[in-house]
Image 1 (cartoon, rainbow, N blue to C red):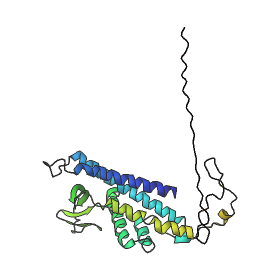
Image 2: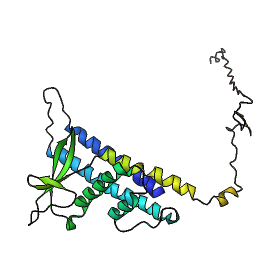
Image 3: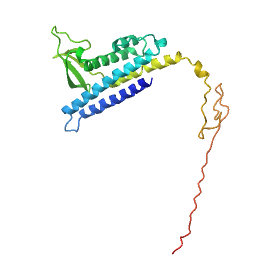
Length: 244
């Protein structure tokens, strides 16, 4: 779980870096309402986008690792293929009618970025998509005019646009609500119940059984109020030092 937590934190950081890089594409004044990004600004957005989807893959891998360690709860998840894992998880996950297309498109986009040996070559562009500047990969069709799976037709062949990073983070994070409660339901707590360890009180803790807010049936029985008073005394020394 620690690896999954760190992966999700890193994914949030990479999302923020995309949004920071995208901020350079905004209008700079009323005299220049249209953005004219420099090549360096475009490269910064592409780099941030690449890092985000690379981290997304690591986060899904960490999620798969947790699920595989709890095979008694979820069953045997497929390995060596995030695509097969997402298909396997689809009936088990949460809000997968909306989440699965996002998670799968993010996986496919990352595959184009990092698995160049098994995908056709592409060039990348920055494009305006509903007011947001995004990265689009564009390539040529094969000799028979076909285009890769997961891409759309483009005047020069095929194209695939980076899916929205905010929606991807939400679609992935919400799966924790299908993961953690299920693990808790099947957790063996017998050893925990027999554990003799007790939290040691400190000077800042109140005495045992304080405060008592309500009885088990829900009725308020006693109300306690604790007042701490601090008194400070200041004395002025009016004496003057002796003169030599």
